[in-house]
Amino acid sequence: MKKTKCIAFHSYKGGTGKTTLASNLAALLVRKGLRVCLLDLDVYAPSIQSYFGIRPVKWINDYLDSNGEVEEVMQDLTDIVNKTNVTLGNVSDANSSNNFSTEGKLWVGFSSAKKEEIQKLEGGAGTGNRKQFLRKFMLLREQLVSDYDADYVIVDTSPGIRQWSINVLAVADILLLTLKMGDLDVDGTKKIVEEVYNIFTGFGTPSYLICNRVSGYCVPHTYSISKDAQGVIELQKQEESSDIVNGLSNQIGMKIISSIPCYCDIQFLKKEFLTVLKYPDHPFTKQLEKLIEWLSS
Image (cartoon, rainbow, N blue to C red; front, side, top):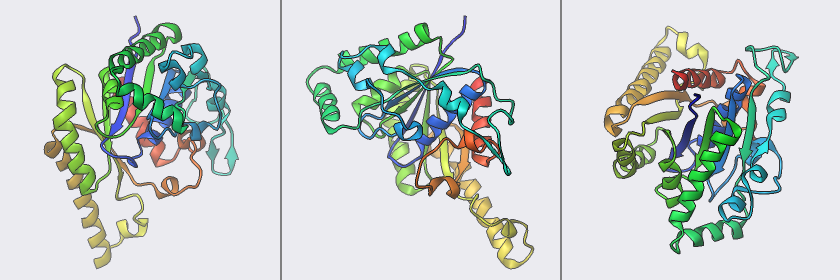
């Protein structure tokens, strides 16, 4: 019998790239022929909708408030994934790279960004309905497994130690905690591991770190191969960055499964898009390929 993996992307603070990672990972899994349900449960600042450019009739908020059924909330967006062209040099061809499969399926559940919807959920969480919402989360996961035969349920959560995030983490099989390499992120991540993650890992839920936007990619190639003094200095900086990443595992007390460089050509774009579909040979795509290999092992 197939076992569905429910993966939650979480972070201590916003701006770590967890939404980009979750959305692109889901799309790449679908292109590999897998059945994926992607949920935007960052209910305070939902943003997955920007990657797909549609407005659903029903939101996850409606399901949580018992005003919508699962089949109304989950949008079949497989066509968007399959029809997004990939770019290979000067050639654009949706079926020409990386042996993409057309057998995968993608369903996405979006959260409403309307102020009144967020306030409604916040009010419910503060008036004794937390157990009810947790039951709804658990029921949603069960239905995605049974009715959609999902291989993966991928969830984007709200950052920080919030009741919504803890509810989501409680029903996940694997927790992926993303962070950037600043002192605030590192210190906050260490705190959240000690206060929250150690509880989940104590009950057998594996959790791992993803270091995102690590310095290195933006360094010009000429520096990395230069033999002059400036080149030597750059190489030393890259080694120092690697040492810092490797030292985080012991400092935070969690294994690092992926260290993704800062790709400025992605980070500073005005419009979000699914990089793994448009640019399958991009280093960012290759990093997610490695993450999928790890998740599949």
